[in-house]
Image 1 (cartoon, rainbow, N blue to C red):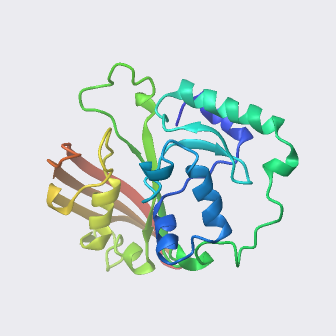
Image 2: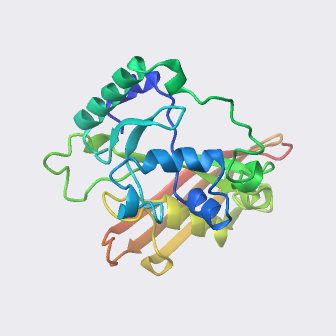
Length: 264
């Protein structure tokens, strides 16, 4: 939600984003009795997805206000309308202010070793010797902003691209001299195109491999100064989707620049 009023009010909350995958995994591994699982499951079970409407498979979504004790006090699955979101946020703040401290908080501090539903190191982590790129992608309708889409000019998605050290070095030609080039292929390019190029007004948010008709990316060294190597990236993509949930077409020229430190 990129509405400035929502962003301003968010300073009074502790924002948290999560996905259903870890909870499904915890349930399959017999970890549904842990405190973390029970708190979130109990809160989500109080939403419109409670009971058999979605909690059986953790099919839930929305923006909700939950106390540290796991009590749902506001929220809805209506996140595309800023006015409705603001009403729920204010409702949550008012309810929280009326609650005694004993109801707001847990009776004890959670133990990260016994109360966590999955081991701390079970989640994927960025490679220590690699490259982490921040991606900001816009996704608007090719027909223009639809009536009622008051936030459409601000719609965007943010993500991170992780590359190992070996993958990151593929963005630099093997020979370090001005004019040297290298075609970038394989997983380094495949993941970039499939998951991070283009954005969807509607749809799953990624491309299927057979929808990517053409992809090409080349890097060229344009300057060398000591240990610093300046590279330029050029390429193009042609994507044509015709699936049940995504019928978008996306064609683009790729252009970029980067500095590579051979010492670091």
